[in-house]
Length: 151
Image 1 (cartoon, one colour):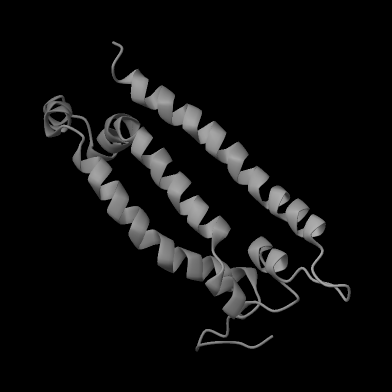
Image 2 (cartoon, one colour; image 1 turned 90 degrees about the vertical axis):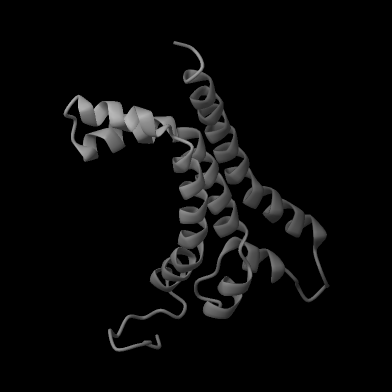
């Protein structure tokens, strides 16, 4: 396996390489989205907690983070969908040994031509985990949106 860089990490055709690429491209987008969600948290709530002599870490984890929960869930859903459906980096950084589902689906062909039934089944299997995750996270997001309105 070819090693890239001075660290000697095997990044081509490896799980580590894909995680690093997806993190490098997904993290700035997630930070940008979360910045907007966190800026909607009222500053007065944080100031009131500081007056009550609560530490900054406790304020963040017990006050700010629960208030920004819908934004965190929405950001997670968007970044997860990007990583799950990403094609270009997986095509460039992987070979036949280690591939993602979109690459495997795109490479479905046989000596008799394209077998559309196999491609359809593979696409359905690839979609199912995202549907389950979106359903679960959607319920969590709706409950988080409603929790702030009922006191």
